[in-house]
Length: 513
Figure 1 (cartoon, rainbow, N blue to C red):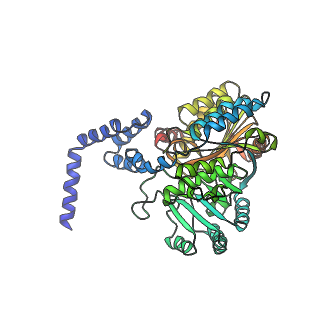
Figure 2: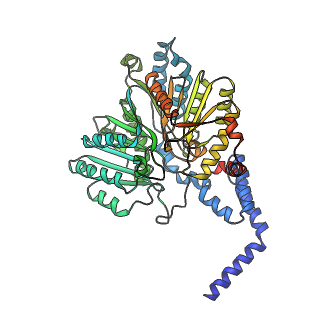
């Protein structure tokens, strides 16, 4: 044992004697071998300077860009779906021409941008139900699960082994025994505390389970970035769910630490269900190495999709693209399902928000648990507020991640200085993630208004071009305001030196959060 301590002391002495050269070498790695945002580079250099050696170990945990291309090479190939984008563009040109005097004409560019850059097909025959309470959302989900006849596809970032999941398991087992195909996909970070015996029990009943980006050292998850933050459920191709609720007792307001959990989840019927199905299939294929596109039944295609995989994928998409001009009279909800992630070349959800902010004429309402915008998003919101647009931001009154919370508080100060109005939700914890603009367009889903959601996590949102749905979301926002405390610029200016210090420290680290 004494020899071990002597060896450790010798190594430590060598590290201290050569600390300058080691830091120089590691700095070269960070600066010259990574294509990162300059702000992030400078932040990492500060961390390395103030926490030598250990700072670089932290870099390895939080910033694995050096092998991202290798990790997601397979997924990038799978994501090259043969969407019939040009065909829909042709249909859109004709269909939108019929809306000459409609307010939707202001959002032509947004529709085409989402379609062209990510294949986010516009569907017009949808209906949307909105859930803001976890008990009601999961009660509705369980009823729909009981009615499943063909398949159930479940994807959550977090699945915990508590009373909520235990109430879902019997339904899944009963449906599996009735011949329903069931797949459950969870993230390796969010599901790291789930006992393996639970998954084995489900698999013994014929339920397929897959883990996205699993840990490399048992439950010790060192890879914090590139998490699959999506929450999607698709049942029989007839109904889908997407939003902020995960599976855990806190999401049904059973955790005293958070109290009431205020979130937003959408229940969708219509052709957009297949857009979410395709997104689930891509993630499932990557995690499980099973190609769901080989079976057309998951996409409403009667045949088994003979031909190569690309032909099957295209057939799956074409199946739910009826003529748009015929759908205009349907009275349904227009919607695009947009996804983003570190495997994509652009920041789709972030850019979608930018387009929405730049087109706002009257108001922009934002709900998010974390507000750490990049320069472009922050500038767009400040410009809107300074131009007379009513910009309102709602964040939680309590943190679930303290560093992120105080960085959020810092950026809130920038909006206040520009004339925006900011609120903290006081009735528990606010986890809703969405934007509403001018009572015309809204966007809700899994993405927070922060750099991590924009660049490092896999996310999915629904952009909704519908006055009735957007107005319902805005009415809910206004009801939430009754449970909020408005933070004025005067209030913000009077915060203590200790709060200012925490804000500045966390803001310096914001590119890493």
